[in-house]
Each structure stands twice: as structure tokens, then as C-alpha cells.
Length: 441
Image (cartoon, rainbow, N blue to C red; front, side, top):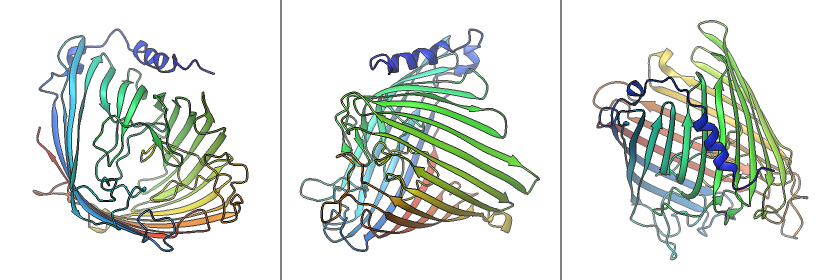
């Protein structure tokens, strides 16, 4: 096992030590003001979720509905001139309730559109304010403060009204052409419905975990124009070590026809104090597909070979598995799942900016017979759930304005249906997301 204290220090050292001595810093930095950007994203978000049998709803009536608006402002400076450049990133965000109410605001569940107080009432508004200092030396950028990592093992989620963030230190290096190396040590997170930038860690399936930090290290490499490779590891102190390997393939056969595929593999083992119990999981997914003109068709398969749910940080995007979709992750113990997905780009039919997507996934053989006490699920008689099944069907329509004053404004409609045996809910949900990005600088 890697020494706990040295994990993130070693990661940072590897990133920083890989910088080359012969880079023109003046050309790379560009200037503090000259390289700055200021953006404002207006996001209007409607979410409706109905549990068909009501048993899993935290609101008591099986129905959750919320409509809210967000203004997400981000400032990113350039770097000061010189061998070592410094800069700053900052953000200010506000979420405003437009419509919801007691009994339909989602309560304290995975609905997570608006924060809910101890009386079960959604707040009228909430904010997030934060920032990070950054330093650039040659091709290495180090950030300290509130950050938005994006890796297969730690990733800030952005599937709700306001994005998730983390607090800590990150480093990114791009010295070698085609290779991006990343590392970080984070000691707090801020989930989408929290104004507190220093929340404790929580996982999606086990809930809150009293871990002091999460560290990660790894990289992505473009082997050539057709093949990408990724390797990452992370440690949620006293909870787990996670390891990830992935590859993506894309090969053009003609101007109209191309084939693609990929593999994703995770291994997760308990660590230190074993705050989430004993486990040794591995889960993988594989995908193959074909793109012909405006049409894309893909087939994927996924298997969890472990005895427990494959877990990840709550509301984060750090689950790079092909069958992790709008609601279901298809990641229960021993679960096997298949999914077929179809995409249509209407540009070829004279409507640029309009696209459609539909997919259907089905999972079988979920078995909690050997799950630990943290992840165990039982039936009404107290017996571990076995032979569990589920399916999910998603439909999405998206349009992005191509020209004019409203250029880049997007309209997205997402609809999902899921049906399952005892271990999951039967639910229907609709999400309507309208976004209007503005570049001020």
C-alpha cells in the first residue's frame, strides 16, 4: 500500500518535475489582463420526478417538482508575465426558487434542485462564492482554493441548478504533446444545493463519510488521432482506493462512415479505517458503435463483479461507465447490463443545432447476498435482495441557437422512465434546461 501521507505529495512532485526547461514563459502566459475571461451563464431549470409506487420518495407523496433559475458568473484571469506567472479564478453563483412547495420539493433526497431546511421547506434563494489562486510555471498550472476537477475518479458534477466544487490543491501538466497529467488533494466539497464551500465528503450510495481528504493522480494520452488512453487512481482517506483504466477508439472509414468503441475499468478496495466497510470491487463497461452521416448507433455492456455497490462522490461526475445514465448507474453487486443508444444530428437535414438522443438500458442479476453492512439491501423479511432487475429508457431533444443575438442559447428536454424490482423505484422524470451563456470578456 502507498503511504497515506505521501500519496498526494508524490502526485504533485511527479506533475511539477515533468516540466521542461526550454519553454518561452512570455509566450505561454499572455498577461494577467490580456488572458482574462468573464462569463455569465443564465440557467433555467425545471425538474419533475414521480415515483410510481411512492415507496422511495422522501417527500411522502412520491412526487417531486421544482423550477428555479441560476446565474453563474466566472472570472478567470491570465497569468502575469515572467518565468512564473500568477493569476486568480473566482466565481459567484445564485440559485433562485421560481416554483416548488412543501411535499414536492424533493426533501433531502437525490432530487437536489434547491436546498431544503429542517422543516422541509425549500429556500427562496442560495449562493455560492469562491475562488482560487493559481501559479503557472512553464506547462504546469497549480491551483489552490475552490476548484472544479474533471477526472474519472474525482469530478465536479454539473447536472443540477448550480455546479459542484471542491476545495484544495490541484496541478495540471501538458509538457508532453498529447499527454495531460493531473493530480490533487482536496479536503472539502460543496454539493449543488449547498452554499457552504467546506462541506464534508459524502458518497452517492453510502451517504456522509468522515474522511479528511481525497487525493488523485493520473493522466490522459492521445496515442494518435484514433486512440486515447487514460490511467487514474484516487484515495478517499480511510474509505477507499480507486483505480481506473480506460481507452477510446474512433476510426473513419470514409467521409460519411466511422466506427468507435471503448473500455472503462474501475477497481475499488477498502482503505485505512474502512469507514464504508470491507469491500473489493471491480466493475467494467465496453462500447462499440457506428456513425453514418447524421446517425449514430452504439451498444454497450457493463458488469459489476464485486459484492457491493460501486460507489462514488455524491452528485459528482466521477463514474466514467457507459451504462451510468440519467437516473440509473447499473452498478449494483453482480449486476450485468446492456444498453443501446441512438443519436441523430439534424444538421444534415437542414436544421443545424437540433439533435435527438434515445437509449434503453436493462440490468439483471443484482445480488446483495454478500454485501457488507454499509451497502446491504434487504427485503421486508430481512433477507438480502437477490435476482434484482431494472430497466431505463431516456429521450433527449436539444437545440442550440446558431446565429444572431441569442447565439449559443440552448434548449434541452430530457425524459426518463425506470422500472425495477424491490431494490429500486419505478419512476418517471422530466427535466427542461434552458441556458444562455454570455462572454463579457
